[in-house]
Image (cartoon, rainbow, N blue to C red; front, side, top):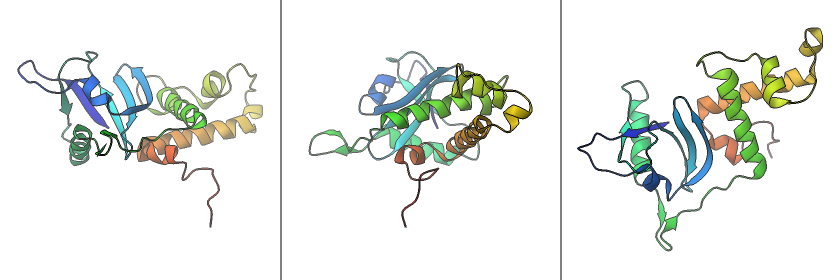
Length: 184
């Protein structure tokens, strides 16, 4: 994930709007930790966290000094110079998710926010099923819940959300792995 924040006053640079103009927004959500977005430049997906709310203010890349610093540095460099189709001047071949892919990404992001990411109080799988996966549906408790197909599906979705968090969003949008049958 590339993290952007307001640049110090003495620095000039690109604003959030200038970063986002050539990119297509695949998904976005405002959280306490910032404005999280998945953007496509046609070649790859960029996961961003915009810490500041000022879209016209110059931004700076925030690269924490941890084991992923070199990865974040590379991602920042790629984001700073998105690929362009020089024939048209437009971003190269934008990825456009289907409506199903967009809804699934939103569901998995909600699951991450509600049950997986260790930030505050996490919901149980039963609460998650009642609130987000099966809203408005009467779901049993106890032994009935433990043996239900709703519980199994909710557990699978939590696992997929964790895998997406750990491996990125590209595989989900490409539709390659997961529950789809692989051709041989």
